[in-house]
Image 1 (cartoon, rainbow, N blue to C red):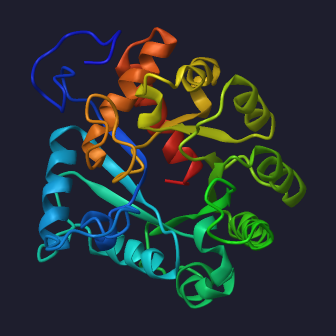
Image 2: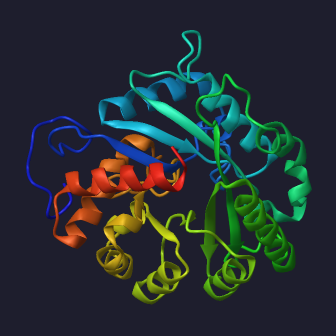
Length: 308
């Protein structure tokens, strides 16, 4: 149990008391993530069927009160799969179903894949974003652009290519009135410069925020919203908890970034959306407030930022 969380019954993972509604603002539910094929350590010798894994993931999310999720694209393939998954949600014959759970999607090019160029997304963007909505559509399937940004830790793509792809996607989000989902690692200066010069909107999300108070203030000054992941529970992340404590409640989201960054006490295991309450409890503890307050605020903020 995370320090500062009131004791409760068994409902929800970790015995965090009565189940309340949570919104996982950033997760990866595509097949290659579910089966371990994209975890930098190689894929299992006999990966389980993605459909079976997804069924269990969504069932556990529903049980934990995680009723809404945004599954995030990182390249053309995973973006197309995210859209298909969101569309399939709720069909009786689809594994993408669980009682009370809804899914939306984003389309984006991760900085690791920036060398492929944003043009690799053109056909999907044309089909899903550029076209006008039909009269039968009551809700958008695609609610954001990203994740995109800069990663100077791994440099899987040249930095110039990362910056170009990021700037293009900032412009796409602004032109289409979509949320912008930003990944930044060891690149705060260039990330904020591009957001400033490209005219990022107040629907910009700094996903998996890992900075401290100074970086938080700089992002907030640009109008961005901060999304906190399982990192906020890590022992060595005091600066992230300080950022969570100072972030205005109406500019705060929670996420899992699953299957990555499982929160304490599950660190090192495969993460999943059902663990959002643990992230929220850590954020609440850093602020000295109840988890229910964080759940309500984060859900409200996610709906606002993503236009839901």
